Image 1 (spheres, rainbow over the protein chains, first blue to last red):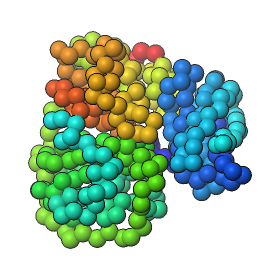
Image 2: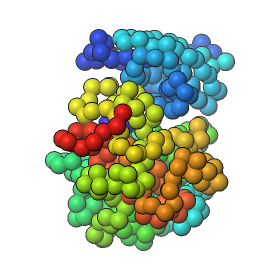
Image 3: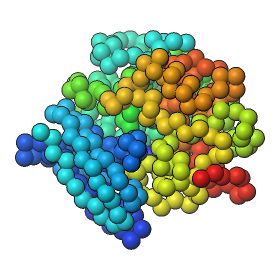
Image 4: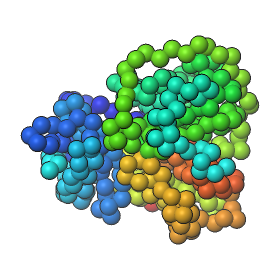
Length: 97
Length: 275
């Protein structure tokens, strides 16, 4: 339900003809960041969801077509990126300087 | 009630780990978080398997709650200090649940697991065993729990607060965006509900905003002090967060959490919906 599901892994069972999946990974210094908090903000910059990255630094959201912002917060720092998502798979990377 | 009675800082929690008479309890839906490392000495409660009836959609009954707390080694006189992931959503839900069954002294760790992790505080993987107790729960306090008929009859007369994100409120999406969007219920919200997302009450590290900021937030959004209030979300855990803010931090009277929330309301035949 509202708990954070496991991040990353297979998209088996996800209908990409109806779902708008935004996924990717968080990186810092050339390595993925596990346990980073990634939040999805809507077009008005309001919080929509938040997940914690997998051991491989991955995150995944099920959104809707439109403009979104991804923001990550981790002990090593923060990063932000805007994305225009469409139905299907939308992939991106968040790099923490 | 004031903030210091119901909310403790991560510093306070770290200083009091292991104190007799204080039981730290982690509450998550996904207990792999706890298993991967928890506060030293904390026991876990699983939002779904421990706190929901295994068959019907409802709480566990009073006797089951007594058995649960007894088995976790929680006594009636213990101070229960709750924390969890998801910005304390499920810990706030458990807080409300403990209050419903009459536990006297319950607190939340401000910022929950997120703040703890971002601060780089220590986590333990040790198995926690506490001696069993004989816990006695009160009859459920229904003055803090709303049911569907009350929600329908409150349209236009009480403060109804929809604490979901604006895109859920408008029906653009049907669940928080970390979950697949295939749901049975209709999209939209209860007519006359104000959309005051739970996230506006929290800072980015998961801690609650100051009392002044919180008071201003609800006043600006049209909260009517003279009316009773019902908060809802999708399944009742984010609205527990707002219930905690309104009743426990701001001290407002007559605030109920509608835990049936949108999963129930959006599936009811014949009730009005706005989009």
